[in-house]
Amino acid sequence: MGHDDPVPRSSLLLSAAVLLLVAGCVPSAARDLDPAPQPAGNALSPQCPTVSERPVVSADLVNQVVARADLPGWQAADIGASARLADGRLVWVFGDTVRSAGTEPRIVANSMLLSAGTCITQLVTPDGGPVVPDVTEGEVRWPMSVVVLPPRPELARAGVRDVVVVLCGRTDRGDGGPFDFEFRGTSAAVFVVGDNGVPQLREIVEVTPDSGDLTQVNWGAAATVQDDWFYVYGTRLTGRPGEFGRQLFVARVPVGTPSDRSTWRFWDGRTWQPDQARATPVLGAVGGVSQTLSVDQVDGEWVAVSKRDGDISDFVYTWTAPAPTGPWTPRRALESPAGFDTGELTYAPLAHPEVALTSGRLLVSVSRNTTDLGRLLADPEVGRPLFAEIDRP
Image (cartoon, rainbow, N blue to C red; front, side, top):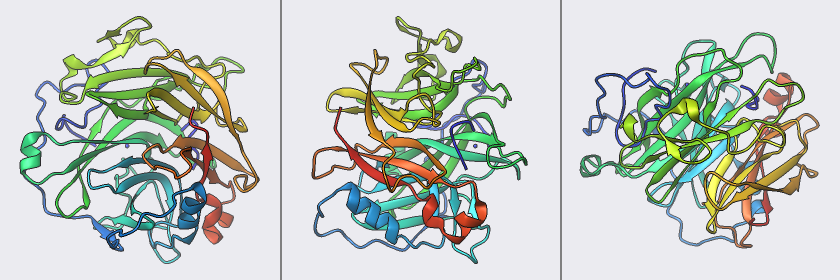
């Protein structure tokens, strides 16, 4: 269930999707997504009423809402990356998800919730499985980050309001225990949201080829959209003794042309250039980040949120920078407080700047878990993220 170390098939899609980061990965005959809407398959349950009053928004309120959540398809899950849709709702994507007793399968590799005010609704697939299908029985797709992009004009004319891109780590679960898993590569799952407000999976693109290299860049560990640019961050373990943090890399592409490989640019320490092999870390492994993190522009500054030196650390840090490439200045933001610590696992802190807190502070979540599967199934609350407020950097 952890994500510090840890998902088919096709060509490019519309202007939203495509994280084709590795030379030679782009098909020779790329095609765009057919703008004609497909028959609805997914559904939302339950339906949320129209929000009439705005509550006082705080981390305490978010924790209360999460604690009250009793959805058959969502009892506990980790990660919980978020983004805002055009209609104001929030979309949340989660990793391994525990479901109610009697719901089969009891655990799926990923799930999606949508929230409006204090109402939470779950995305339900026709087959009752994960919202992003597994690769094989043993290889799953664990979400790392999510962005919402506007549709191309032809898709908008066909009734598409939003394009939701979920960046997933293809992960081999292994069979040797809760930490026996292996990151194999990155996938992009693309959902479209039409007039009925229900995300429908339209395409999965394999961003990077399958690889067992433990030191490969995990592209999609964070992603954000700012102005006309779609930024994609990657993290990398160096494999050097004593280095538990990860290096951080960044690429960007114009929002309007992500399906055009010639427009992708990677930061090489001095400039944006087209060769991924020349990408240079914008943050080093010593004092570096976890496998999954968040990077956003907040109040004019670029803000990364992660545990420092990987998820073995007890402290959540923020890094601030004047640009998406750095230079990054770290600051301790949160020590795992009472209530966050299950006595076992706390990891993958993420910022949620799209949630405006009444206090003016920044909302962050921390994933929790236990290595005792029986305990998790009996008491899923121990595996629910908890939220806190930190000062805006």
